[in-house]
Length: 124
Image (cartoon, rainbow, N blue to C red; front, side):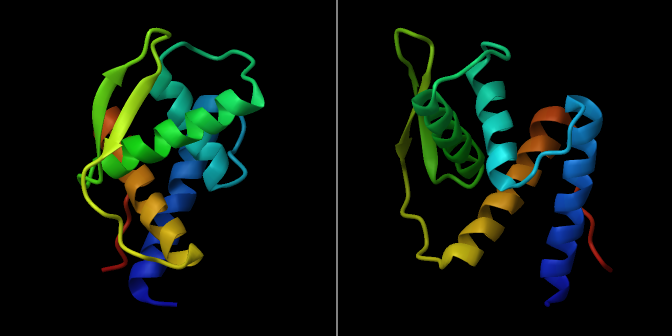
């Protein structure tokens, strides 16, 4: 495993541990963290969401975190207050593992920027 990959995984585990302190339960995986980001971005608090709403929340989260690198731009909110995003630049073609790494890096950056927490850990 590359040094950069090790640093990413260490930072990811740091984030999961910090989220455990905040939420009371350690998120199981990337999808669980994306769900939390989606709920945060929707801004309506914790409630029971339908399966379709959960999918929409994950989409919101992906767009939000990838907007940090200019892949998406917020278009605005619909009449129910749900954010809508438009793609602004083409995503690179990655395999599943590379897509997961890209999302993890952006999720870490999201928490560092939005909540002013230090998560990223380099192995220098």
